[in-house]
Image (cartoon, rainbow, N blue to C red):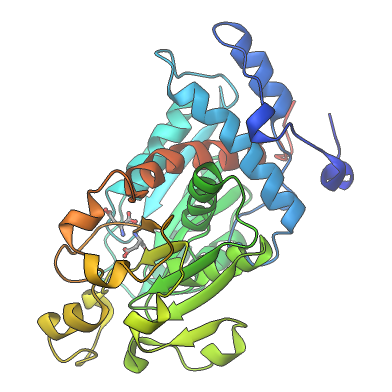
Length: 345
Ligand code: ASP
Ligand code: ASP
């Protein structure tokens, strides 16, 4: 088994030449590729090195083939318990993690505690201490407060995976986006990526900016000034408030959902106005690169931030690939973290 120190030197076959076994051999072939994650928890992509991110993506890429077989079950997490603790409602992320855990053979429990009657801090810590006593191995957490996953990781003895905390980070989303881009373009390095819309409230934007920069992409944020975070000038990216201009030459246009539930007060004059200036339609998209691909983390507000015809065009939309890559990336994270657990074999 490779120790944590030797990680950066671990190399996997590049995607193009990666040859996968099938049938009974796939289990041992995958087991040999498990990446040992450099940290006990995945709280964010901040701090993930380029080589570690690439090794994780290589491993996830190998798992895509497993997910396309009839028998999708592996035993890498057999005997492990994984808890999905979702304080904020989610369908796609929660089911993606659940499938990932089950396909690796873990026992998966879903919990959606209500936060309304207690303060969020108390609920979180009480729940964490109670859960910890049940000895789970992996705890996937989503919470409306930024910093919740990190706080939880200090209270439990298992590995914590952040499935979205407030407007802070959503690391598995950025990793699945990177995997989708690598499969579409071959490499993320050098890609011109525009992230458009409600950057202010978006944990997806934060995690993507960090990971895309780590992987060498050029990132431009586009949105109205009211939906840009203060201090965005220190993010090391270009910022544009004019979508028609900002989108020019883009290889990738990543649209963000207008997070109406996080808005107190009026951030946009009206949804119709918003679509006119910042919604992705064919006319604006025509200014991007001819090889442009469109992404959206879901759930989409059709006709608000993106035109249906664009979202559903299989020639340009990566939206379904993103969902597929989500399961593979989450399997890769779970297996990689489990390899570090104290009682790992
Ligand atoms: N924001 C949610 C998620 O990421 C969207 C959904 O549940 O469909 O899971
Ligand atoms: N599903 C993503 C999230 O949970 C994006 C969104 O909800 O708009 O952050």
